[in-house]
Every structure is written in structure tokens, then in C-alpha cells.
Length: 175
Image (cartoon, rainbow, N blue to C red):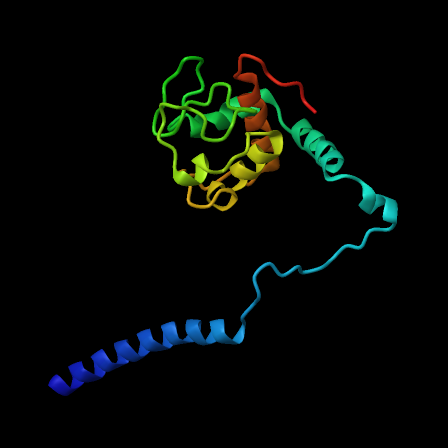
């Protein structure tokens, strides 16, 4: 009887080693470099490459924001409202109050304890910054405290950004 139990224990241990071993061996065989570009699209003319980044961003962000709408932004905002207040004069919750957040400096509310990552970020919540942050906050500003996975849908992000912009003393005109 004892010999049979030993065989079962050995079989379980060998199975565990094989499962984890295959993962390690495949990692060694199929290594990739970080930031590898799968393919590169070449520009057709030199004038296209001479366009300034800010002009391209304005065109891109305009098309991006055109995908959104305030009604969708209000619905998507419900996810955010568990941790953030959007009301004028609303207090901080788990996250800081977001009234007037658009075009405010990142980490600017004085009565909220931000992570060091946000207080030292040194930028403002522009259209592009907010979009990048909402895609995946932990990747856009590493080591921040926000535990939100992000919004994958471009329409959802554009809608939330429009909603944040509207909840302000002076909403900015769209680019």
C-alpha cells in the first residue's frame, strides 16, 4: 500500500514539474525584445514627415473626440463614480475629486494625497494625456495608486473625456 502512495505522489510531482518546466523552456526558446516593431509603415513623401507633432495630434485628437458623446460618457462615468466625485464642490473619495480636471495640472488638488508618481509627473490633463491615462493608468504613469484596468474602447474613452470636460467651470472648446 505504501509503495502505491509513493507512486501517486511521484506522479503528481512529475506532472507539476513538467507543467512549470514547459513554461520556462518555452520562455527561453521564444524570447522577444521589448518594444519590437512588428512592421514599419514608410511615409510616401518627405512633406508628410515634416508635419509637426502638435498638428498631427490636433487632427488625431479631433477625430478621436468626434467618436464620443456626452450621454455615453455619463453612462461610462458610473464606473468612475465609485472612487471619484464629479460634482462642483464635491469632496475627494478614494480618488481625487474630478470637477475641473481637464487642463488642470496632474496631482494639483492640495487636500488629496497623490502617489509620488502623480505629484512628480509635471504635466496637465490635456486631451492626449487623459486619453493615454484612461487606456491603462498603470502603464501611462507607472507606480500611480489608481487600480483601474482602463477603458479599451476608443468611443468610451472619448465619451468620458467629453464628460469630464463638460463638468467644469469653463469647458474647453473641442479641438
